[in-house]
Length: 287
Image (cartoon, rainbow, N blue to C red; front, side, top):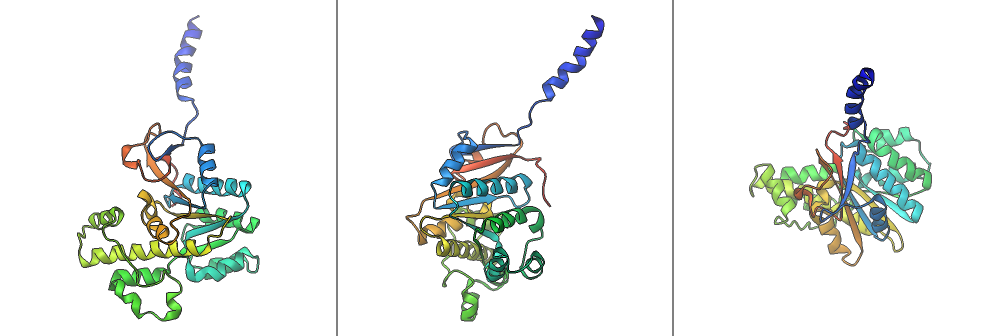
């Protein structure tokens, strides 16, 4: 009897700890819980899906891959767009997807992010296997850097050949957007020249991604776009520019957020997107 009592002292605490560890929850934009199946169903009815990731979150990368696979299973007419590829690398991406070149050429010649192998290669490998087109949507970083250093007017001096890698000019920047205003505030640049250049640089990326998504989105085809969460949160950034080009297309947005507790959605994340993937904040970082 004494032995059983002593065993129970040690076993009971362990039984309270040894539970399934939930690592993410799904919420609608208004903070209501949602199932993965409900989210996939909603995404399957959209013509364009924006997945706003956290670039260093390992689980976010796994979830975007699962969504791509499940959407392809429902309808194989899918196009994958990626912020992580710059538009002037499109021919290299095409050649790789079409099995014309090997990965070593892709790695050597495309301007890939440092975390490509861990975080984006699985998406590209799946697309290559299933012959899913990949669109490099981002503006070449040299032009975004030029705008940051010299201002949006510097784009006018580019050659015509260079301008095909970005949104049609002139670039219209709405500095009143809350996402752009907060960017200047976070940088301590309240309307200063460098602050406005920073926003213009971000806007060039957003407008260019919207431009290439609109260009390559086809009727009956679902465009699945992967980008940093900041680019589409609050339905701004890329979405603002995209809806000016394609106001009648049905879009659904997904936003990744991190919280210590994932039982309820913090009010700060309400309204960020149609669906919020809430991930525990101690999730493994990929870099």
